[in-house]
Amino acid sequence: MQWIAMIAMLIDHIGIVFFKGEQVWRWIGRLAFPLYAYGIVAGYRHTRSLPRYAKRLAVTAALAQLPYLYAFGFMQVNVVGSFLFCIGVLYVLDRTGHPAARALIIAAALVIMQVLPFEYGGYGLLLVLIYRYAESSSQMFLGHLLLNFLYYVLMPLQMLSIAGTLIIIYTQKRLPALSERSAPAWLWRGFYPGHLLLLSIAAAFRRGLFAGF
Image 1 (cartoon, one colour):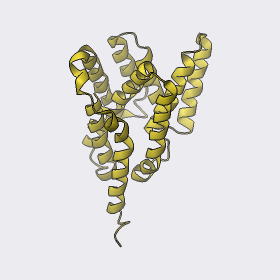
Image 2 (image 1 turned 60 degrees about the vertical axis):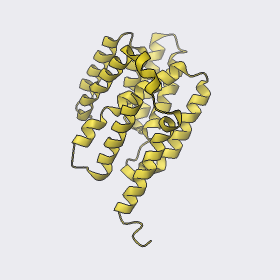
Image 3 (image 1 turned 45 degrees about the vertical axis):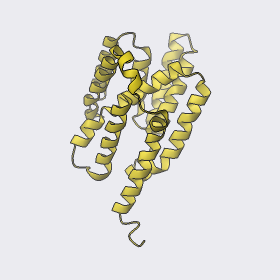
Image 4 (image 1 turned 180 degrees about the vertical axis):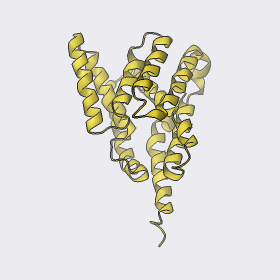
């Protein structure tokens, strides 16, 4: 899943920077977010040190923010910052027992993610919550499908992201056979800020900022 997520993200971001009128790049890119979101939930569940895990995400988000702003022109917190916020929400929810309090926490978090704004906003948080609390593959699939319908007006392209959940479900069944094919840790952790830096440099050349050199 890591290789698919990175390749899909790269294709999506190349399309944003260089081929804005060609939707096929964005279609392929819809695979990336659910795979990364699932990876974040898996990391939250299995990390030996949540503070260290959160620190790595914070460093990654900080390193990526300026290249992200320059390459895309999106005035929002990048997706790793969104995932870091989601991790904080999961941490609070897992230590809150009262259903009404949990509902208020989720509602407040959704508002914050939309207003600040964070990339993917409330959609991203809700998908993370689905992956965290779904008790079966069918719940995961139906939850993601319903979420896509709810956000269809705002994010119609995300309907295609259901394919990411299908990949996750398939991978869960074949996890022992696929576990040795994961990407190296340095590549998985460094890909997001690294590829954004390269894209921002390429975008600068395209815009003629280095024409005098």
